Length: 242
Image 1 (spheres, rainbow, N blue to C red):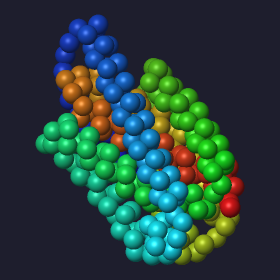
Image 2: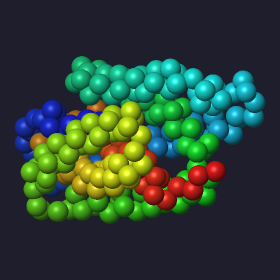
Image 3: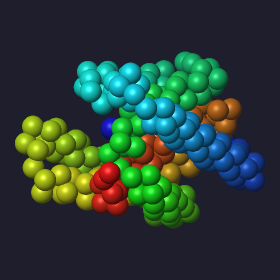
Image 4: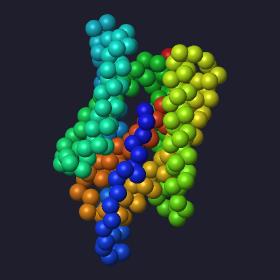
């Protein structure tokens, strides 16, 4: 899934350095809390769907045997991301947060299929690896004094290329290309995680008045997408199929 470009959100507000640092810290804390809660909602949704899949009338069975439902949920996810990102300035903080968690639930429904394809221990192992890699790159993006703007531009161009390769391989179904796509996906989202973190911090510095929740929701959505995509690509390497 394509990640939302944080460059579309900008502003210029002043303030003393001390108060600015405190407000930026408050925004980043809210970002990580919302992101964690979003991941938790997704994980619980996926687990509940998989745990109740004990018959051919279960939702998971229906999802696995009806591709139209999977694609309908995928389109709904894209629609929610676009709705949140495009309408964030006009909607209330509560509505933005509600849509974010609705997206997390819908994504949890689609991701429930991984419990069919992979063993639970390997899913947990991959989640831990993802958390470690994501955490390291997010910390780097937050504390580095080096501008990652040029890197971000390159990574997003590479991301569009990756999407094209994914579409091509849907029809070609080449195993070698699938491994190449997976490796590129890991590298791209490792870099994007650092870049997005830096962008969120810079937006918090430029617009500290957005600490009321909307910027936190935007940042949480962006990093949530980074984490999920990184997890899915790493799962292709570390996941053990049942």
